[in-house]
Image: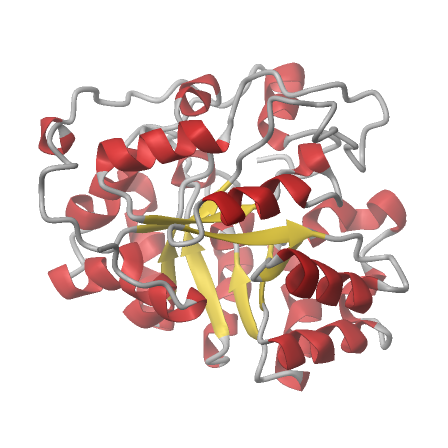
Length: 332
């Protein structure tokens, strides 16, 4: 999958290559029809993008595209909560969408509205000399719980390059993260993982999450070198991996993405069930617009489809691990 992206990467794919191949996604998951009435286990979607529908109050200062006006599809927090209630998802971690740039006000306000159900990771400019201060500002003044950084957008010299990832001055950011007990997640390509490793080794108290299997491309002629870079990170106990985006990582792009299972199993064997996290991406109808499975289908994928996950493993991946990371409590 291309990673040289200026806009949201799904929009980029649609604009330049017609998007990913159509997925054969089943519909009508009857096991979720009465989710609100059933006993609900803790299910935490750790990777949820939402965006506002009021650009005057919450503008869209896309940092990588001066021409960006507004998203093509709606994706509000109201849509998310409706989706969560429909499928029995108890909690979610909001990850700032690139549309809103470095202004994390919308997701901060979302958490204030749903403090028992939501956590939030913002975006801050990694090249800003005051990036550590910005981390403290958003966490202390606005109640965010961590930050996402996207080295993948700086790959191969883009936007000034990714030297910031392991630069000497970046240690200030990581020291501040340790002080604030922040969780940091990274949208990062496999060749950039050695730079991340430098920081992980130097800051063993900072909890790190690698998004989307490091955006592995399992359709490339030989994914093994990239895959080994990801597996290598399992040696560090402060590193977690999101079991997310099989719809773009897998070669087939066809639900339930069985061609990717051998790779998921190897990640599971390397990191163990305690350091894997469930996540999806978009709320409600935005899923269909971006050619994604429903939230219910994503839950089924982890709970029922992965043959190597025990019942206990699935419970950890779907929610218990996230509850520990973000101090989430079962809903009353």
